Image (cartoon, rainbow, N blue to C red; front, side):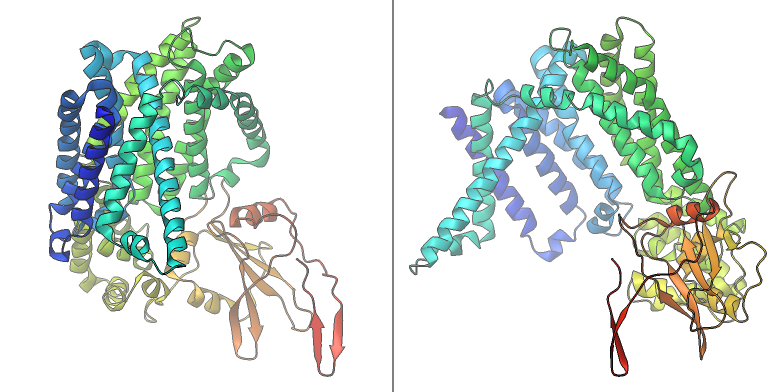
Length: 575
């Protein structure tokens, strides 16, 4: 009972702290120290509640305070590179680094508190404590959700008889935070008391069963890739994201099969051989992800998101090399893999710490990279990410924008885009802003014409170039590399029998769904939206351009019948 009261008290203090931080005056929330205090509170109470039952109050307090201080200090250092806390967290990658830095050291702190320095490399303790934290936190937060659902239902029930006390209480921020903290503390105390029943073993056994399935899917993917072509893979950033997500799933499943030690590791041949197969294929997934990212960087330059994705690809590559080395070590491959996991965990903590220092600044890398591309003539002024520099990339982006303003007096196109940036109310109005009329727009190098050599109808080229938005110009400007899918394609085809001459379908590798079509009307060419027919999910632009290169694109008739009603016709379009 005493331990439960301690958990509840800590939860109440945590709830009170977060209420004070979230309900603080606007002046304080805009202050520099607000974000580090929030980070310190989150890291401290997470670590304290996770370690309390195993280490006792005094040691858990000391270790949790150490984790919180380091995380908060690094968040303050990174905060200085941005105009405000929201701009820093909106990047996404900084939030991910803070989460890694605030959570991943907790199992190591637990192991250190239990076994001293030896615990820092004791894989059995690290593995089980990590999964215990995950399962206990999930169970406790599920309990919190159930409690709030019951309280809301009871409040609604009392409202029916005119008793609004509970409903009014749940509308008060302080009450909500205190209930949340106390409930979370109580839930964690219960699940730690019932550690024999609430354990990760069942979850780990279930996850093991996915290993053969994932091996089969990854094998089919890699076997089919040469047949489909690498150009299809590198047409969009989503390919790199899918590859990295799959690689992370492979890392997790292999670790689950290996488990904490020789006793708990999987012994079924189908599971152990499936794990070996995934370890062998992991370097291929990592290599393809790095190649896909390299293609995007070559075409469009660096952005903070691409820097973050490259860092994640580097982590995956580290796991891939470690797993491959473990696999080649022979019969002790499981032991070597456990050692690789510990080493990579330390590497991830170090990377997260460096990520929040000036030594690794994705915004600075992106800003300097875009400036270099502009200076080299690789990118035009209309395709520069000016809005992102001004509003998303913190002080490095602002510094790069200041350098561009110095050059604007010598570049009319750049001066025009900067003027549009200053006048734009939001990102979308800036993206829709047309390039200055005095700036000639040339045919993008990455836009191919189909059929090749076909003469463009009169007025189409001017209408097309005028209609392309800056982002589309940037997407179509980069020529495709060897074996890669073209960035854009313009397909001439007679799609309207009532209108003379062909229409023009614009395909962009970076888009999804129905493409746009240029049709000629009484006042010249105009851009309209097309409609996709056929079963299945909406294709990507890469899919459509790949089909075009394969020769499977041609005008075909569509069977339609209409109900004549006077001067009107009623039709049903195919789905």
